[in-house]
Image (tube, rainbow, N blue to C red; front, side, top):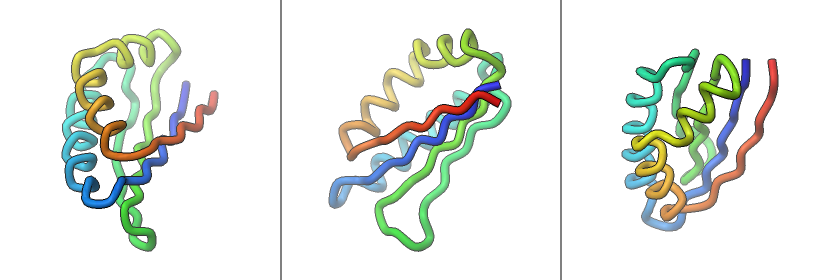
Amino acid sequence: MLRLNCFFQAKDGRLDDALAAAKELTAASLKQDGCIAYDVFASATRPGILLICETWRDEAALAAHSASEPFVKNVAIINDCGEMKIEKFEM
């Protein structure tokens, strides 16, 4: 299994746009083959910070996800709204 923690810092005034795209991406991702878990969290202590947590069955499932239309569309929006750092772990 693979786990990704995607930390996001929104540009001023762009958090709502990023959160909407992250929610849309989460809903689509949960329907994809190989998705074990997918969620988005907003920080309760740091304004403008989101965390997207993903768990995938294997590299093939993650690669298919990364090439999917919902991923391409929504990650482009999220990246336009701020800066993301990704941590990847094999479990």
